[in-house]
Length: 125
Image (cartoon, rainbow, N blue to C red):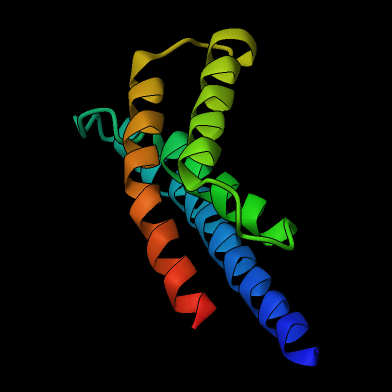
């Protein structure tokens, strides 16, 4: 009876560490890479502009799985909700509306899905 509790705690910790890594990596890039690109007028194909969305989509998905005791949720549905949340934020709450942010969020949903599948398989073993 103790094994499922330990497995669940281990799984949740791994997802939390992934979420914190994404969040920390985003902060690091936001305070180092973005100012560097802007200061030197480098054309990085909008990468500096969409750093927040690049890290926010996987961080939110990993965090969702970290705070839930079960991983039986549909990964695709979670990522769709994640994407729609960021779209809602971009359209209503963001200071500037940018299609590049929405595109980055969509791309990161497709990138995050296989990562969630691989993590689920590796953590459940």
